[in-house]
Length: 96
Image (cartoon, rainbow, N blue to C red; front, side, top):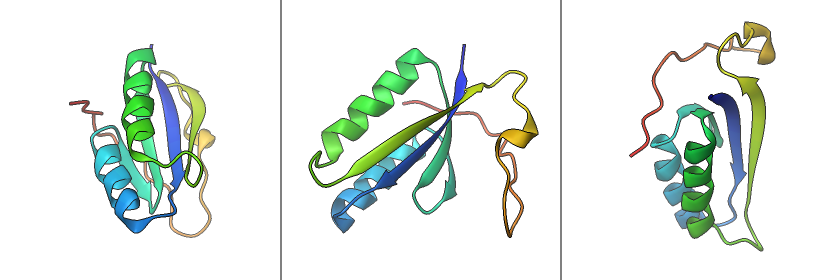
């Protein structure tokens, strides 16, 4: 079973920030500057956490994983927007 996650990060160093961004492109869809929408099963989530854990400096950076619930039957109302509308990116998550 897959759940939809928002992965949000605050990285103190520009070089690490670029590496985290490039890594996250392999896991999900880029929504905003430091936010990705990902559809993870337990193994995908563990892989993502491990990959990011290798890149960040744990005493300076932060990555948040927000579980929005199961992907099947997820209501469009889970994410709302102010300003430009939220568009559901119907692209597959590719984990390499």
